[in-house]
Length: 115
Length: 110
Picture (cartoon, each protein chain N blue to C red):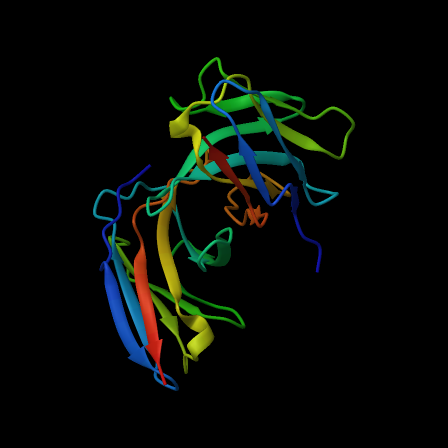
């Protein structure tokens, strides 16, 4: 079964540093997402991406965040200057079609720890 | 997205059928009902999606009454590996983002 992969599995960084979280979505999927989950809390939507542009973003996704699909396979989330409160699990997800289907495939996540 | 309400936790024993009910009183005409499962430190996993009546797949069944103000996820003969958090989500056709609530933490005992 095809799956979404994410690297690294765990990233430790110092406050103020830039981090890039990487995802390889399922190859024939067209819609891509980032979510995060702070320890013990709900899964929160960050951003959706389609046709090489952001289609929707949440209030969390401020100017410190950016997404990119640089080469047609990878989908990245960049945090320019990390804060302590950015510590969370970050999940990438992909979807084959946006029409009346909510069957998003999630990756295993990257645990980001900001110290 | 329509708000959902589901029990915080449920306990069951191996081999039993588990039914988790979700309320979504404000569901709109074009909303679909979707259930996800999440194990600790893993990404959510799609279980089932429906619009009305009953949907069944190899993992679960989803029962939706005519008024669609609630839905019930039914897991037949649960095992220890079904211990997880189960999320009920209601989504509109014009947005594909998923809005997760706190879910129902199902604990299956031997």
